[in-house]
Image (cartoon, rainbow, N blue to C red; front, side, top):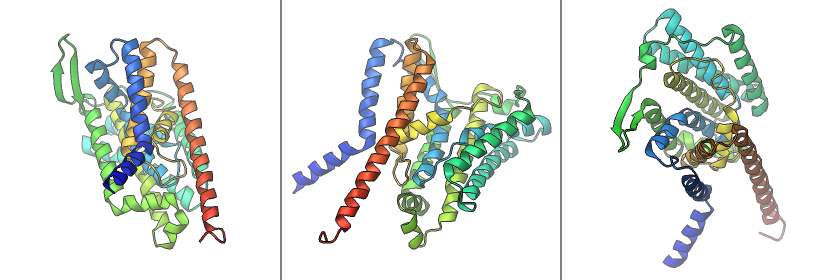
Length: 341
């Protein structure tokens, strides 16, 4: 019996997308390490962590929405709007850091809640509602800002915060900075919230079967606002961290990052039909895309090829989701057929 249980556990472990993703990461990492000498150097790895910290923060918010059975394409525009509004408040009004940060986070959360209202109250399909909000938010931002960046951010926002620093044998500095720590805290919180709280379990239940969740008394409307509000909050936080990293607020800096974040989430096992996904899987998806882009850059491959990789990733992940859904539906029909009780 113990042997059977161990074999079953091993089989279940092999079927998890995280394990396959980890295997692919090891293969890709080995290939790039052999092809590009600096790929596995500690400075390059830490630089990748900081560069992709912003996308990772947004991916945590998108993961919650995907688990709940929705989809959001507007989070990058939300991040841009929240960042720019906070920059205006800081530079034009001169308000202190806590008020500026809270204002930026509230703006992002409010935009996320607008998406939830459109989807739940107006019954607009999530992808249509969020594409419309993306277009409206970004267009208004570009119209009122005239596309002008804000370079005069206060020192408290742009000063580099280093939690740990060391020097390699060849003299390169390696720093653990605020964006990396923020990413780690957000990932840990999202994991604990989604796996250890009743709200997290309800979000999984709603994404898996909304009608069944409604019948057992789960507040679907409330959960829509929780999921999309959380993504709006994370998008705003990512926008603030991005401005801290580059030392300025650029209206279109976050634009066109939606597909990369979405592909990382679905690559990590988050289903586009809801109810499935893990935080470690999403982080592994980010890691794989980061490795691919960095490795291709080191090898001098055109950046357009990376966009091809993202497109193929979304197509394959969507196809797998659809095929799995059809297979599950077919099995349920066979099981419920007369004579199969």
